Image 1: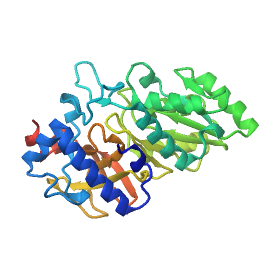
Image 2 (image 1 turned 45 degrees about the horizontal axis):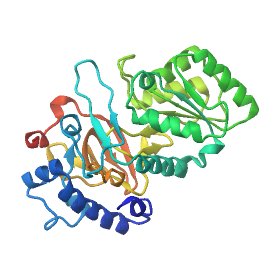
Image 3 (image 1 turned 90 degrees about the vertical axis):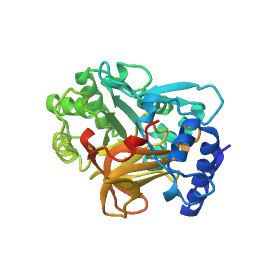
Length: 325
């Protein structure tokens, strides 16, 4: 229904129109989301701009089956978590939507996938099933036309040798990795990389002490001699990703938009330049829920860009908790 329309969005007006259409669709077809909207006295009759659409707290993905489609899910993506911790589940009715979303967004930032050697340093994710990040990385590696593309577990020495060989050949390389693994590589095998883009996907996963992005990027830039560290912003609950070419400033594809909510009043949005909780409209989520209030903190720079500042502490999450069904 929406698959062609959302990926053809090219203006704010077309985004706004489609967002309202998706809201109407999800209000009608997603029981959990409709109950949440009803508690806020919001419905298609009194909601006609994206800013007025209710954003569902992301915690709902841990306890509810969020579906706007009657179609049986093709796959269930799950978040990582420690033993005994509840994990998020994203029931995906149509995997082709996810494939189109991540490929269109990735190539709009980095060009044709087949032109890149893609090296994935994602050990923590490879140790479990149901990772949307692993699904994406696997698809990008498969689409790459270079035989060197692939996953690296904990064999940092082999990865360092591969990077050295490819650098000598002058091939364009994307090194995609979780933070702790990139830090391990930086400490054990510092290299001067002139043809490699390093992209961190976040995540210490308890392997190292948490550090702010600026500190992480400084260590990696110094170890590898690169001017900037790129970042990917995605999560289990989203079928789209935003990308940063440095400084923690992220740009989203046309069918995904960031909003900033007041940390003291979860139902109010803040103007550009103010710090608050990140709300996201991801129209690729039309078969689940497209309107999500995350636990991340950020600041909008302009209509297209947002700076990710970190995460709320549990003590800071206010407002919408009382609305959990």
